[in-house]
Image 1 (cartoon, rainbow, N blue to C red):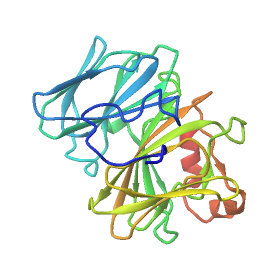
Image 2: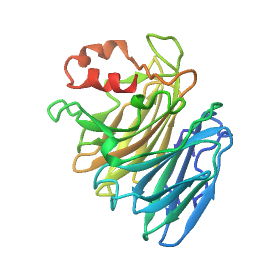
Image 3: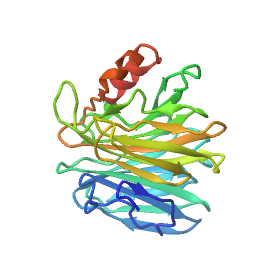
Image 4: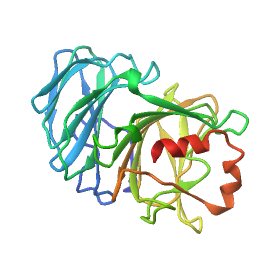
Length: 280
């Protein structure tokens, strides 16, 4: 299996991505699945962590700080996320209140100390991007976003919902080189879900000359974006969900570089400017 692609499997609550991954050195990612009464504890030394409840309800403890009753939705399609930012280097413990509780743990390398805090669903900011007419409509829900400047390191986490048959990450852009104010260097991880789960999509990864690869993405797959342009498309008849982790190599402000020949689309696709502003 390519190093940029992780096919859906039962990870048994073990991290999918850690600091020793051959493609990434800034990113951590785990999926925790628990039934009522079960608990999981873990830590990632040198990383700041964010626990996002994908489904179910749980208590989440970050070091000595406990947050009760986190999680309100039955699945990722039924509302905004309820989450806990665990700070840096703390032991994270999740105790499930319901069967089928699932928590995504996103992490970014961080050498600063930050205090834990809760991000309630009401605090999650949404940006509506694209349109059905341009086959590009998606909604981006910023969980740990630019508005948390000063409370977190270089970790950004969001949930993206693409309409059936639509593209996201479009116009094609990249963020693999540190050259502000034109572009900043960020690692990125996409974790996919589809509704219905029989759906599928395509994930492009390519360089300036168009050399690269395309992955067929299915329910539960994960794609690693360490460099290059990376537009995504979902099949007609299927909504697409992407849990997105971004980690800045040098700063928190994400500046995307859009491929030159597609810049004209910036004026054709609604909401691109608002989308860029939310990541900066």
